[in-house]
Image 1: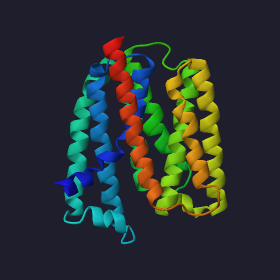
Image 2: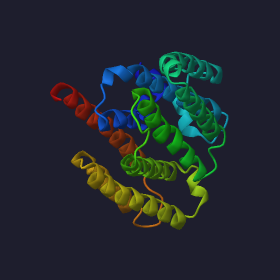
Image 3: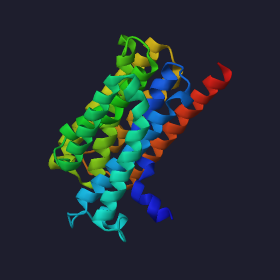
Image 4: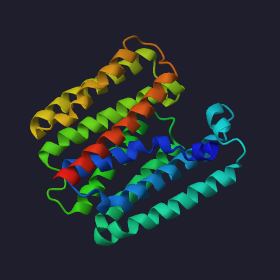
Length: 267
């Protein structure tokens, strides 16, 4: 059973769920009112993961992917991807009917994810595509669905940039550990990219804490020091670093859930 769930890679869904929860927490929204969007993104994350495996399985060098889907044919993986996309789309119908702009945004997300899956060997550009499709646009959809104005305030931009840079750094570290696209650059360039994006995360994060007057964002000013430490030398990070990143992402997911539920119960 666990092997079947591994196909879905639910542990990666935090990457698109955290921005949704971020918008809900920051604006003190009611979690239950956005469950369709949240679970829609869970289904879409599954779609992206299985589509990625369907494409990667053609490459005999993708040993990790081939091992993960062992016992399944590529057609079966594609079927799972299509069905997950269908169910996810149904969960987005309500918000699209009420806010047509969310339909446009969802279409952009789909296009960006497909481009990533098809052309993920392009370094830097793909991290930007993932940051837009997994951080900025999901946050925007929740904000639009809430009906709050402005859609993005000046103060919010600091937080959005922080999480965008945070996600960008995480993806670079992930790819460096896996030997993916970013490794087309020299180790020194990889080190510089990680350090710069980490410093951006720290500086914008501190600004966000000050401007928003919210101490609960302080951890995001400190976590990037871990990435800087990992890349203190221009060498390939150990494979375990990727697993640490996935665990950390899920811890952040739980962190925001706790903050949201507490606000709902107390506030």
